[in-house]
Length: 574
Image 1 (cartoon, rainbow, N blue to C red):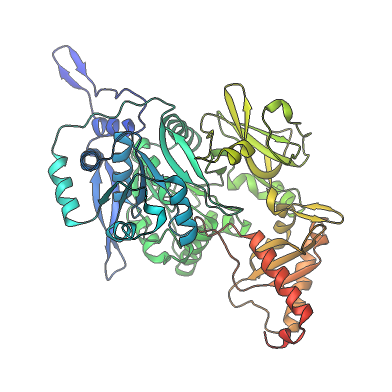
Image 2 (tube, one colour):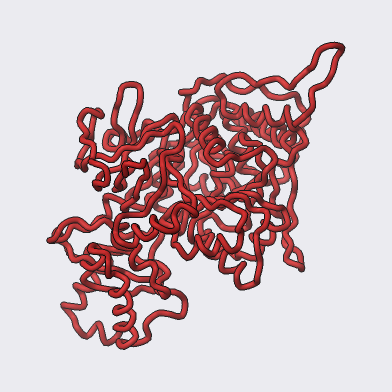
């Protein structure tokens, strides 16, 4: 912290930046700790495997985002301008995002790997008025695609001209922040679309403020820490938390395919204290460390989210970073964070309960957030009075409210009505998940509502079944799916075997299935699985590479098995 300066008998302290603009947190960090490290951007990997980083302080980051704001304003971007982001993760994304927030513009962030057609649908729906992106994105936006017709301004970043302009502007006086309220639009962030079409979520400056405070209090992050976020948007919290951001060398559209070596090397060299990633990414990093006998001594906390975390991965991380707390937070783009739990709590009774079919424990609500489990209702719920609370331990639909809960989807009134419940001044978000709430306040996650399997014997939630089979040593991933054209469906488990463990013949397959059935003992829901299917790779979401597309799997295997029945010769040539 910068020390007070003595002037006569008075102590002059850094000013408190007023207002509701969330970018004020960066300005305050630049005033209080101007020379503290803000970003580390990978430039190259040396012959010794070490990653060379460009380093930037909070003062410089504030100046560069001021410069970006001036450039954007000169190109016609102003308060309220919806601006599509097409920027690579890391320093440039942080500069661009804060430059837009300082203007009061509205950044639009869409996952780059969701698929070209889905991406274009999101762009067309949002109708952005400006684009800030790399050269290829700007060039593409000039093609006669309908999605880009709304654009009136384009700014190319990463070019020599961009860097020169930014250098020229960076020496200017601090730029005043746009005067916005807590309810002013701040950004449109798109969901991953893992169980439906991606939707834009309307964020306000006040919601971002609430998220920052929840993350700070829940995980006790301290100024001066070093974070390596494996999800690019999580890096945007760090300037407000006064935490340095190390950008990992990975492709955000294929995070689970990243080479773990330079990521681990950077984590060790820069003494990273905290890191967020999906189970798929952390699995690769943990395997790499174990193969090479590496440990991660600087880590104080590890956050893993995006999908249920296998017990084996939690055990690996305990060995590799014994001094770190491993957290598995629960939430969604529309509502983050909701609850959290540590790996120490998950081992023992919680893990055994999950294997028996009682759901995966995701902890208690974070401070300021309230969770309820209500009886399932198809269709909108206009007010909280229309809901019926479940008894403790009863499975139902999870809803949550709090200061970080978003109130609407962008230009989707029907989706908003289906997902939001009015409660006076508050709004509850329907998480789209099944769960059960215990008398101790612990929430158990039972899977997505849309993915439960309706059988002749009743509903099977995915997370009541899959944990029993995930403990099999040869299972990498597995998914409960519904086979058939309409309810009642046949419950089947699609298994992705670990590398080198795919059944080679009918005998191998039967032995594998026998082992799976043995795992199901003691779990009444798991014993109802009628068929076991094997697939080399299960389809997963782009954002985390961990959420399995179960509905897609169900459609594909239903069609495949139907074709086999109509033409038995197909099986001979598969």
